[in-house]
Structures are given as structure tokens and as C-alpha cells.
Length: 274
Image (cartoon, rainbow, N blue to C red; front, side):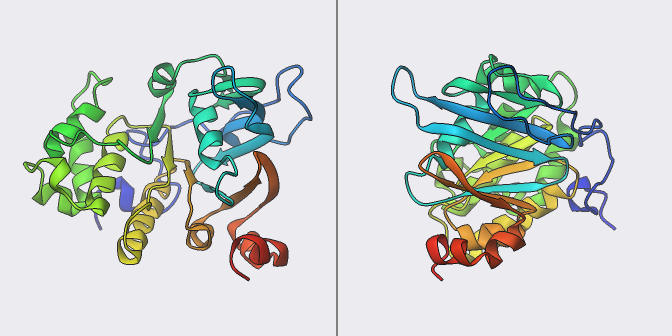
């Protein structure tokens, strides 16, 4: 059996990779809206209302959460606020009402950089690699906040994405779209994150590459790392999701397990093509 913790059974408790603490008992801060049952949520954006700068609100009382070892997927029509919700959780826009909590700690007022230091790994949809740098240099950049030996983590990333080891000396900008996405995810994993956030990880790739990326995402989740993901390929994403959130105009429209949402007649009719 492989020694790579990314390839062991879900819930692997190798603390060198997986955050050892489970989600706390998280309650909304005063004035954030209705209380939620979030005892097991490791990361939660709770009843978030907000937008960019001084602009209008895009999110309206929106809640998304992910538990330890879980894949949570945010889906919905174009313009629904999916990526905005992800960015709100990562601290890239103003949350005017609500709170963001990580492992029981309120991080609503922290900068994105501070959230990375707290254990959040974020892969944006675009501009997510250093094109002129080699694959290996990109991975090394992912470990910029670490002061320990990164070689073991890099080998684990190479085992998860074997093509990256073959191309480790090649400029990342010369790779295919799917391979560049692997570099971006691998770089985020180099931080040894407590939670991994992916914004449209399969955007612009072929169906075959999409399936491969989803397989790798499942392998990462099996180590216990929570994964929060925005996806335009809703049906395929919900098939691998433990939990799904359907957003419409910045609000929660439907929430359930991936299976429940796939079987919901209204969700199927409105968002999955029947």
C-alpha cells in the first residue's frame, strides 16, 4: 500500500498532513442573523451579507460550511454569487453582516494572508500559477510560510500528480490547462492546509481531465482535509459532494447532500437540465 497519505482511506489521521482538531461548536456573532446547528463545521461562512468595496451587497444572509473530511460544493446559475461567497470566506470582500469561523475561531476581520497562516489554502479560478517559473518552483512558492523541511510534502504532491514530477523542470506556463490546475492545487497543498478552497478547478478543461481532477480532489479529502469548492459543472460536482449549496442571487436556495440535490426535482429542473 502506498505511504502517501493522500491515497489512504478517508479520515486518515496522519497529523503531519491532516489538521488534528475537529470542528468546534460555532455560533453566529451578535447581529448575524438566525442561529445554526454547526457543531461539526470546521469552516463556516455564517449568514454572510456583503459585497466588494463600497458597492452593493451581492451576498444576502448566505451560509456555507464544510466539515472535517468532507467535500462541500457551491453550485448555481451564472451570477448567483458562487465565487463571491468563496471570496467572502477567504476575506477578499467586505462581510457587512455575519461571520467567518475556522476551527472554532472567528476570523471575520483577518486579511487573506492571515487566513493562509491560519491554515486556509485557496486556489483561484484564474491567474493561479507563476507561468514563467518551473513546476517545482511553483510548489516551493506554495511553502513560503513554512520553516520546516518541505521535501516530504513535495513528494506527496508528486505522488498525487505524477505528471508534475515528470515536468518539474518545465515552465508551468507551457503545461496544458489541466496540468496547470494540478500545479495550482499542488502549490496550495504545499502549505499543509487545514482546509482547501477551490474556485472552479475544472474550468476550461476537457471532460476526461475534469474526471481526473475530481478523482484527485476525492483523494485529498480522504486524508481528512475539508474541501470547499465552487463548480460550474454542477452535476459532476454534486456526484462527489458530501454536501451541496445551491445559490441564487447571493442567497441559499437549496442545501443538502450531493445525492439529495441530484434527486431533488426542482434542483434538477432548474439547474441540472431536467
